[in-house]
Amino acid sequence: MPDEFEDQPKKSINWNYYIALVRRRSWYFLIPLFVGWSVVWGASWMLPSIYRSSTLILVEQPTVPDKFVTPNIAAGNFQDRLQSISQQILSRTHLLQIIETAKLYPQYRGRKTSDELVDIMRKNIEIELVKNPGTTELNAFNVYFSARSPYEAQQVTSELTNLFISENLDARQQQSQGTTKFLGSALENARRDLAEQEKRVRQYKEKYLGALPGQTQSNLQILSGLQTQLQGDQDNLSRAKQQNTYLESLLSQYRTMQRSSRTTGGMPQGLSAIDLQLSKLTSQYADLSSRYTESHPDVRKLKQEITRTEKMREQLTAELNSGSGQDSATDVATSDMSDTNAPAVMQLESQLKANQIEIGNHQRAIEATQTEIRNYQARLNQAPVREQEYVDITRGYEQSKANYDDLLKKKNDSELATNLELRQQGEHFRVLDAPSLPQKPYSPNRMKLCAMGLGIGFLLGAGLAIGSEFLDDCVYDEEELKKLLPVGIIAEIPGIATMDEDRQQRANLKMLLAAAAMMFVTIAIGSALSFFKG
Image (cartoon, rainbow, N blue to C red; front, side):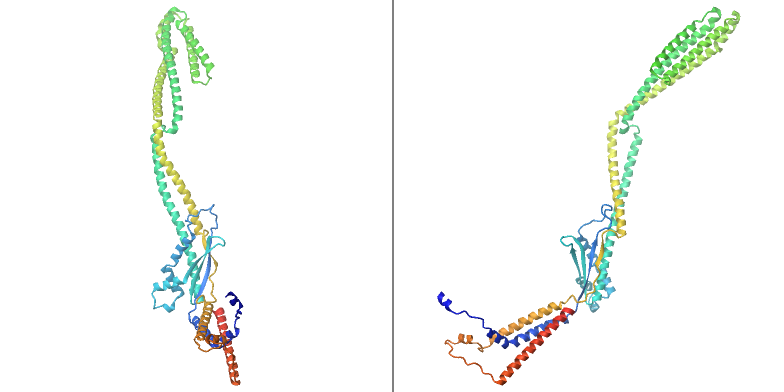
C-alpha cells in the first residue's frame, strides 16, 4: 500500500480552474464589495463630525526650595489632588456657566434639562495623566474636550484650562491660609496657657522669695555670714561690757581721787589704774595689729579707746598739776564743784552712756541676727519640699513654653509659605501646550470606517461568489466530471465559439475590467478623502 501511494503522481494546482472561477464569479464579488464599502463609507459621512481640542498642563514645582520655605500644604498624591480639583471643575455650577458662555449644545436647547446638558458635557471632557519617561512619577496631564465645531472645542478647552489653573491656585491658597489661621489660633491658646503658667510661677516665687531651690547655695552662704556676724556681735558685746565695767570703775576712782587729791597732795591712786588700762589696751592693739590690718573694725575701735584713755590721763594729770599750788581752803571749797563740772568726769559719764547704748545696740543686733539665722535654717530645712513643689509647677511651664515656641516657629514658617502661595511661587499649573485648534474630526474615524467598509464588502463578495459557485449545477472542469462518472473519459470535445460569442466575451471582459477599475478608483478616491478630510 505505501508503494501504491508513492507511485501516484502528485497533483498540481489547477490555475486555469481558479482563473475561470474568477471570470465566472467576478460580478458576484465586485458588486457586493463596492456596495458594502459604499454603504459604510457613505454612513460615515452621514455621522456628525466631532472635533477634539487638547492642552498639556505641567505641574511646576515651587521656585523657592523646600529647605528655605517649608510648604504648609499636605503634599499627598498628585492623582488624588487632581481628582479633587476635577470634581470641583466638573461641578454643575462651573459647567453650566461654560455652557451659557460658549452657547453649547444649541440642538438640545428646549429638549433637554440643564442636568442632562451637564451630563453630556461631562462625557465630552477627558483628563489624561502624563508620566515622566522611564518613571512612574506624574508631572503633567492633558485636558480634552470634544465638540461639533473646532473653534468651540478650542474655546471650551481654554476655559477648562483656566479653571484648572485658577482652582488649583485658589485651593492651595485657601489651604495655606487655613493652615496659618489654625496655627495662629493654636498659638493664641498656647500663649494664654503660657501666661497662666508664668503667673503661677511668679506667684510661687513671690510667695517663697529667698526659699527657692536655686537659692539654696546663696542661703547657705548667707547663713554662714550671719553666723560669722553673730560671733562678731557677741565679741563686740563682750568687749562693750568689759569697757562698761572699766568705765564705771574708772569713774568711781576718778571721783574718789578728786575728793582726796586736795587733802593728800600726792599722786592719785586712779592714775595708776589708767596706766594699767592703757598698758592693757596697748597690748591688745599690738596683738590685733599682728593679725589684722589697720582698716579692720576691731583695730580701729581699739585704737580709738587708746586715744580716749590717753586723753583722760593727760586731763587728769593736768588737773592734778593745776590744783597742787593752791591753798587747802580753796581746794576744799572747789572740790565739790569739780566733782560734777570737771571735763574728765563729764567725758567719762558721756562715754559710759555711749557704752550702754552700744551694749543695747549689740544685744538687739544679736537678737536680730539670731532671728535671721533661724529663718534661714527654716528655709534650708524646707528646701526639699520647695524643690519638689517648684519642679511640679515649672514642669507645666516648661511644657507650655516648648509648645508655644514650637507653634510660633510653625506659624512663622506657615506665614512664609502662605506668602509664597499668594505670590503664585509655590507649586502651580502651567500651560505647556496651548489648547489646539483641531484640523480634522476626532470622531467618527472615517478612515477606519472606510477600511471596515472595504473589509465588509470583501467578505460579502467572497461569500456570495463562493456560495453561488457551490449552488451552480454546471460542470466546468474535467476533474469534476470524473468525480461524477464511474467510467473513464475517452475523449473531450472542446467548446467552439462563434465570432459573435467571441466579441461578446471580449465586450464582457472589457466591461468587467472597466467596472472593476471604476470601483477601485472610486474606493481609492473615497479612502483619500476620508484620510485628508475625515
